[in-house]
Amino acid sequence: MTFNIRMGLANDGMNHWRYRKSLALGRINAFKPDLLGIQECYDDEAQAGFLQQHLAGYEFYGVQRGGHSGAAMEMAPALVNKSSFRVLESGCFWLSETPRQAASLSWDAAFPRTCLWFRLWHLDTRKELIFLNTHFDYQPVAMVESAKVLRAWIREQANMPLIVNGDFNADKQSETYRILTGQLVDVHPNDDSTFHDYGRIDKGCPIDWILMSAHFEIKSSRMDCYHENNLYPSDHYPLLGILDWKA
Image 1 (cartoon, rainbow, N blue to C red):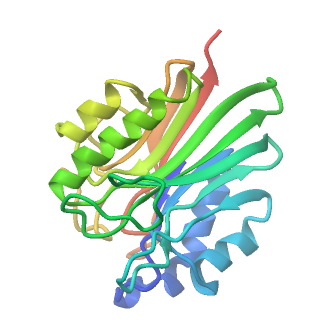
Image 2 (cartoon, rainbow, N blue to C red):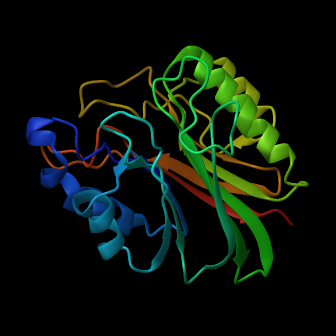
């Protein structure tokens, strides 16, 4: 499951995090994903703390993206269901020309951006895989160059099985999408508009993706459009996928 929950600092009026946090948590609990990528999670008690408290069955790994803006404490955390996986290793790199430098900023990017990853042992099948979560910048050059950084990192993983979740801020006709799907498979390969701006947009924004290596097969995928009257869990719809190992 990948889910941009909209940062709790945003001045969203009646769509503020305090009004929709239980609804957002409810969508996670409705699906109970083994692997969960979250974007726009602010590292404070109101947002990250709330999720950690109520998702105690998950290993939660988040790193502040850094920088000098008011959003420096924003994270794109990766969460793993402890009943399904054992964490072997975790790490973070930045989408920049110096990926190992914390809070590094390159190209035309508006903010530093991270990729967080887990190397996991799947308890049922006794197989290893890598799960990665990210949130790309929205500036055009940064999106393309970030895709190249991510592609290069993936190529260094010696053909390990991979699942990549993220808000890529790019549509599926973009160079960003072409670069990444040259290496990975789109789990939900249609144009569902995952960004909807609290119900105001219904097409043209399929920017949240789940990507996988060829080690897996897709059993099903869907976008979760649940809302209660005019209250939405976020300004993005979560994207859900069920995968299995290929025989």
